[in-house]
Image (tube, rainbow over all chains, first blue to last red; front, top):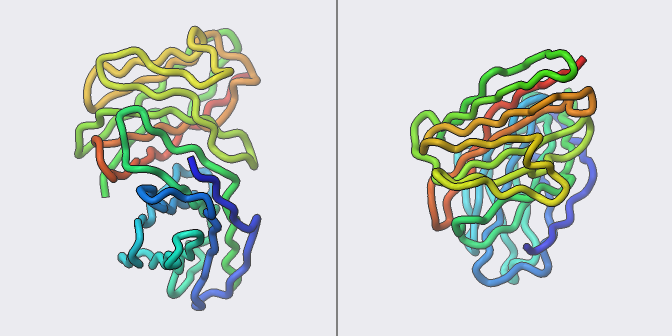
Length: 112
Length: 116
């Protein structure tokens, strides 16, 4: 698997956009970028994923650079409920035995 | 999105007893299910991968005789912690995946196990 690098922690003011960076400089051509988050004492929650193009859903936007070596997850209007650990994961298309290995993620604190 | 449930959400047991945790995919058939363990302030650690109808594949360092995994149907996997000890106290999380392709892995809410 391509490795990812994320900041250990970040703060963001409530109501502002939270921009979480992820570096994945060794990503391969067929590997997707996935984002999950884990709110304290809950299971991880899927947020979004993408391959080359930018993606947007009801939760967030994913911006992937043209060279695909980095990406940014954007929470457009952060709320206190967005306080969580955010994991950036790079994965090839799923095969039968593929699995998600979690790194340490970014601990995002939304400040009131 | 797809829903994965776990039962129980928390359990307290005495040292030496066995505990079974269930993981169900509620609105899809899961060809593959995964079990993770998470200690306080640490990331999730993958324990094993289980495919329906076949034996689970355990990660290095995980004792297969202690953590018994059964994936008898496309919607149910169970993890049994046998002869539990206080060091097995942890947050156990399962996840499920529908099939091949760029599909998504969905996670359960987790089970908090406390062994006294």
